[in-house]
Image (cartoon, rainbow, N blue to C red; front, side, top):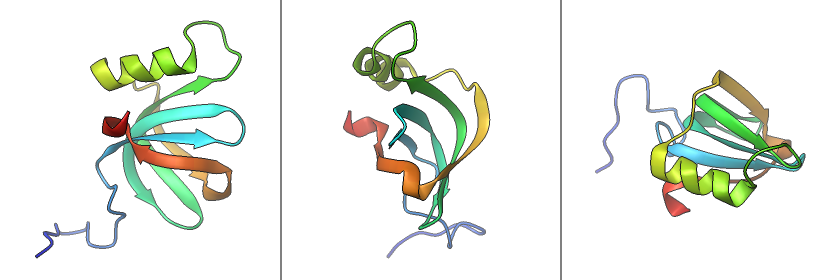
Length: 93
């Protein structure tokens, strides 16, 4: 029997889970998934790594995120679903 909480029964199975969303534009977002559907992915308390930016490479950045979490630079992010190449749990990294 699946447990549901008031107000959560219509949310994605990833609701409340820290996820990695990779976009076609070279961005890698890590944040807590609020919801996702055919139109959008909504993240809370997220940070982003952009290909080509100064600093650590993507894989190193993801390894740090998996180990320590991310700095919540973006309180709420809405990504167009068509731009999201992959969406997976950070724990899978």
